[in-house]
Length: 165
Image (cartoon, one colour):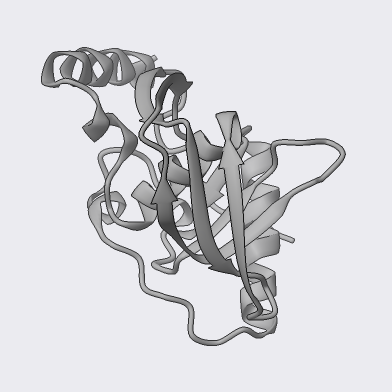
């Protein structure tokens, strides 16, 4: 396991759609392990391969101490509830700032596990928010694009100020 450097906003790689994983091998397991280690060091509760500069559709979430970390390969939203919720969001690529984002309250995703087996999962609350946030990132949509222009500009200014120290 290796802690990898995190790609920082406004790196253009964060705006690129990640490629689907087609090979489920030891290299994929190593990538997932590095993602988990990097996410914990950040610290964060979710991370994607693009956050470390790898253009592959891999997400690691660690939301529950009992369940532990989960790895989602090639996740896609296949259903979303009409009900919406608002939740504070941030990113390991933009540390120190966060804001409220509106998301679907419940979603269903399809994904593969680290061995290539297909699964579906329905989630709500924080897990649903995290799935949507990270799948957006895999699609090249950085979370601040979900904010109004005014909120986004204020948040970017705040981040730049924090980054300068």
